[in-house]
Length: 218
Image 1 (tube, rainbow, N blue to C red):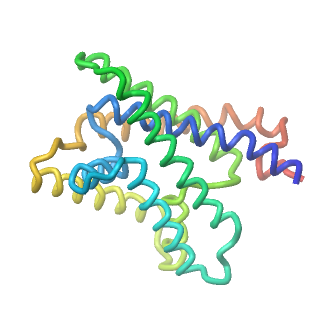
Image 2 (cartoon, helix red, strand yellow; image 1 turned 45 degrees about the vertical axis):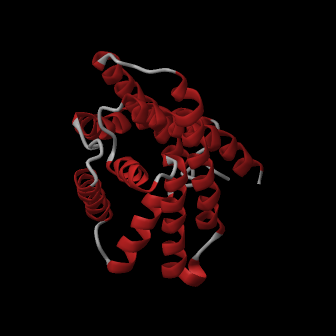
């Protein structure tokens, strides 16, 4: 129990930082990841806040897991509802309260904010993945579906991104809204994986010393 509390004390701030980093990427407005692009495109049409719709999508992912797993649905899966609410709340606060107070007109600065967003998210997500206590709803949902259908997780996760991009582009074109899939989307896709591969091995020894990984947990 003590070890779980210690892990939560690391994971919860890391998730908040992840949401803050994602919000920074949205503020940069030079293109966002597929899942965020879908959220923003839908919100431009229906008028919801980005974080609120993100909550709905993530909680839907949890509901799908419940429908598939049934008796095997555990507390760790249910905890993703709290994660969804927390992430959505942080995104709403950052976008509509913090970042709404200033406007950036320099493309170079926007590009710099995007790069900072990718770095922040890479570090925070590396921490979350290294501790491996609670996962993000989308990734967990894709894993459950992949196991159920005996499909490759990476392939299924990529298919979800492709579908999100197609829907986002379709909505933006149909309603003449700003397109969210741009150069920043490509930059983030290129940098994110390598950054995780760079950061996670460097985090692992320290996390093991602090007894914060699954491998070292008692």
